[in-house]
Amino acid sequence: MKQTVAIRVLASADVDDRAELGDGTTVWHLAQVREGARLGRDCIVGRGAYVGTGVQLGDNCKLQNYALVYEPAVLEDGVFVGPAAVLTNDLYPRSIDPDGKLKRGDDWEAVGVTIRQGASIGARAVCVAPVTIGRWATVAAGAVVTKDVPDFALVAGVPARRIRWVGRAGVPLEETGDGRWRCPRTGQLHVEHDGRLTEVDE
Image (cartoon, rainbow, N blue to C red; front, side, top):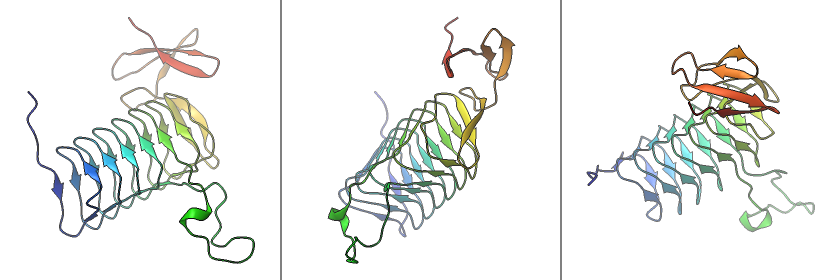
């Protein structure tokens, strides 16, 4: 039976009573977790980070200081979001409607960013919803993602484009020929086909 680990919420953090935090999760100073948010086990929400209404985080996710995760984002297990990165939620943002009236929550439909298992978002990167970041992909620091990112892709730039492949360890893969790639750290083999990369079962 798995031992229960206490949830830790710093006194200066603002966690709504209707949010759900998994065992072992820590919410640091000045962070805010809104109503309906669901965080899995052993997550870390860094200083000043924001987790919007109804956002879902899997187990072992890390939101670094001042990361902004707006609803309805979904982060699977093991996702890393770097310092001051932003996951947006409004495809056509406006403060006012065409008549000049201040827009309210009911005046627009939120769209979310989905981040698949093990993916990482670099510091100050922006993911413009709606996009999906694939499994074990990496978004470089300062990148602006406007299109879906394939599994294992390393993307960089404005707008972000794939520049390398990376493995589960996060390091760039080495090409071995015939569309095959190897992780120099783990030895895991991958095969590339039609712009996609998959792991090879040995």
